[in-house]
Length: 385
Image 1 (tube, rainbow, N blue to C red):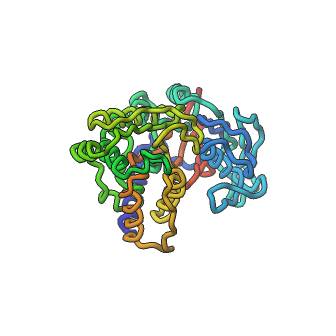
Image 2 (tube, one colour):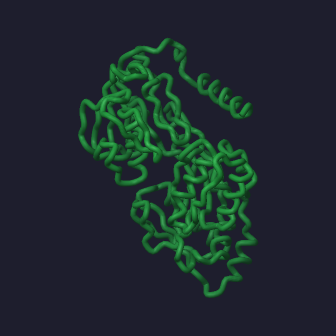
Image 3 (spheres, rainbow, N blue to C red):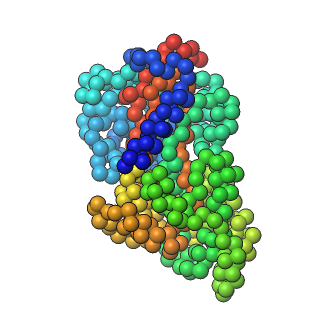
């Protein structure tokens, strides 16, 4: 606990040091925060689910501003007007205006309002950040370095989203333990982080990041090429692996192409198959690349959440863990799942946000948290365009 507290203190000090001059000024009320998101949300009713995981995450961010109570599954409920903001304008899938709730029990937020533009492509969000046309927008991790070089103020969360390869339970190729292990051993995770993610992330050998579990270093991230070649050579029938990825996700495509290169280098027969962005869609794939958000900073809850999300596709049982569970118990469960190679961790990536120079007291959320926009204020002395 002392070690984690020290880490948080250091991280907070660095975050304060990175703020523009004048950030120590006293918070001010007023102003409109301009936000852009890539997703489209068609209903703000907490009882109406979003259409896909990305939209679900974005909807939760907005719901957290409108409703005070949160359910066990992470969704929100409660009376309209119970949150820090209220909806004053709504165009489904396009635009939302949220205004400060003067009666919010936690105290009126500093912002007068929040303008949210939906369906903005990553390139458009980046351009608007560069031109100071928006105040807050999430940008792809692989674009973080380029954005900073072009003058965008960048805020990065802890690595809290797992990119993993999941073998699909019941597929003949996927049921071969030798096939699963051979492909896992062939993948160069460090090259994915260094070249595709531009070092904005961490190679993943386990199902939990180091900052959460403290045991990620016990899982190997080094490819075992000679072992993979020998394993594949010993498999009869020349199996072919079809790897599916979300056709709308450029990062997933780049990672899939890198895996295909690794496979060819070890003689593994692998083809790529773009599929729909539905979380349950697998097409003709034997394995699929998935992105799983860490549901909690606590290792027990985080591990169970990841297994529950990827497990049904992989045929992995989400057996319960004691509550509370020791780090040894958590590690043993993680080691068992990883050792079966049905869920193959590849990389941990952070959420990266671009901010305008007038945003103050922004903090990137921890895993399972939502944006704390009720605490954000704007330095209205800085000119906006």
